[in-house]
Every structure is written in structure tokens, then in C-alpha cells.
Length: 64
Image (cartoon, rainbow, N blue to C red):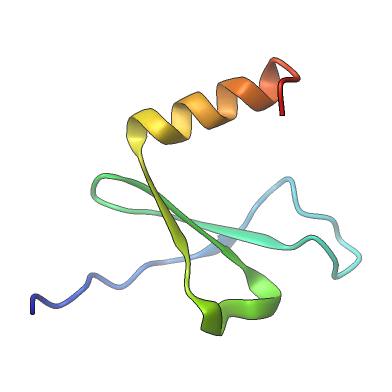
């Protein structure tokens, strides 16, 4: 099994400063990984670049 690259997660600028709703994101070679900072042990979701851009556009348009 190939070794997985180390992901450098950072807190999303959309996360609140109150310790709730904390989402961390990391760039990957093919897109973005997202995880819940309060439940890191559960892993992350991976999105390719097209999926990530579509997701962000849907948020900006108010569809999500």
C-alpha cells in the first residue's frame, strides 16, 4: 500500500471562534481534504478540484 502524503490541515476561515463549528481544510495533490477539528480521529472527506469548486460555488450562490 503506498504511503499517504501528510496533510497540513488549517482552520477554515469560515469556522467560528467560539470552539464550535470548527472545520479544518488541507490541500491535496488532487483537491482538498476537510475534517471536523473536534473529531479528528474520524478522518476526513476528500474532494477533487472540480467537486470542491462546485461546492464553493453552490455556497456562494446560496444553494446550500
